[in-house]
Amino acid sequence: MNPNQSSTPGGAVVSRETAARLAAQTVGPVLLPGEDGYDVECASYNLAVSHQPALVVGVAGVADVQAAVDFAAEQGLPVAMLATGHSALPTAGAVLINTRRMDGVTIDAEARTARVEAGVQWQQVVEAAGKHGLAPLNGASPSVGVVGYTLGGGLSPIGRTFGFAADQVRRVELVTADGRLRVATATEEPDLFWAVLGGKGNFGVVTALEFNLFPVSHIYGGGLFFTADRAAEVFNAWGRWTAGVPDEMNSSIALLQLPPLPEVPEPLRGQMVVHVRIAYVGAAEEGERLVAPLREIAPMLIDSVMEMPYTAIASIHADPPNPIPVQDRSGLLREFTPELVDAIVEHAGPDSGSPLVIFELRHLGGALERRPAAGNASDLQGAAFSLYAVGLGGPNEAEAIHAHLTRVLAAIAPWSTGRLFVNFLTAADAAPEQFAQAYLPETYQRLVAIKASYDPTNLFRATPDIAAA
Ligand SMILES: Cc1cc2nc3c(=O)[nH]c(=O)nc-3n(C[C@H](O)[C@H](O)[C@H](O)COP(=O)(O)OP(=O)(O)OC[C@H]3O[C@@H](n4cnc5c(N)ncnc54)[C@H](O)[C@@H]3O)c2cc1C
Figure (cartoon, rainbow, N blue to C red):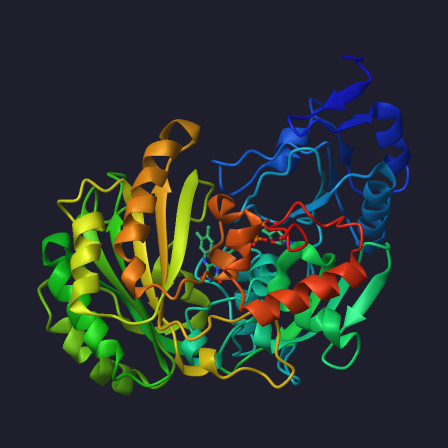
């Protein structure tokens, strides 16, 4: 190969001279494979997916994004985005736009809104809003990117109370395939606004989002941990309990296989446990009354449910904040029955030999079913519970983990809605027919039509790709 060129497994080749033309227009770095800093710029939360783009641009602002998009269009290369790499999809051969330097957060306490730039992670917003007694509809993990999460719907640990994060967006600023910076709201470019909220990275590079905040300074929340040998009882009791709780009560349940690490508290260290997560938006006394039946199910290893500042919300799921190799799949369930619990325990419970470290069900419904008038492309289509299952491992373990994930999904298929949640789509769901499962047929058709109008050459195809269908 010519030493002045770089290629990637995607086959795309960008010469150093061509890359230098882009670098002359950007404030942030432009890096080719093999150059110092390329690996750091491409690093992802999910260590199982290695980004190997033809070129990576560490954008410092809107002008850098426009230069990178124009460059990709000129070179006939797809554009991919990376904020944190929580849902890393292969990006070989693409122009990868890393947004992490765009980290501005502005809170308007009076209007109860936040404006965040493309690279912001949730904990930044939670803390900035918390200073004013306000809360965003953040994700469970503190290090998930605000933009990627919100464009995929955004299912918050307090989502049953306030709805999807996407439903609270007031304004999207994005650079579209023609290199223009556009503003999309419910009244300005309304089709684009509808499509990008659910259509993920298919419509452009979002440079900033403005969304509503809620007056929540404290919640009654935390975790109840039970031994895994009581999994069937705990799952069944939790499922029955969810049927009677108000929208202010948010909860999920997970089978966890915890590592034998010093940072894991002693009764949980190296154990498989059942973790019931609670986030009640309301007075602690009422939260305590509602949670009481769960405390009666079986003896608990740990009970950390108490009044807490909203800024501690990430402690409820306690997702690993640092990069890990994730192999994951997901599903949406119509209902919860004792037979479903039998299937879960058989395939993910203590005697199943399961390699999964997390098998999680989240209780949906409530405000998640009340959609905004303008609507958007994100929808869980009547699902009552979401399922997310994770194994830890790189390429060597991937086959065994995915074989197990496939068996688990087959076992719970009778309860599945047959659809998927956009944010929990993984590399294993990237095929167009699987991506289409995240939408109602009419939503998908409208997305395809809007895509054709805003991105006729399918520049934004290194993302779950709407146009490929
Ligand atoms: C540990 C963990 C916990 C999670 N918890 C939740 C949760 O509670 N609720 C929930 O809904 N989801 C959750 N998710 C899923 C998460 O929301 C998605 O993985 C989301 O895509 C992450 O966005 P990111 O920017 O952090 O990731 P990245 O991998 O950096 O980006 C993912 C995708 O987002 C899009 N994107 C990112 N930036 C831009 C941009 N500027 N413009 C346009 N498109 C962009 C692109 O399509 C990109 O491919 C979780 C995932 C993990 C691994």
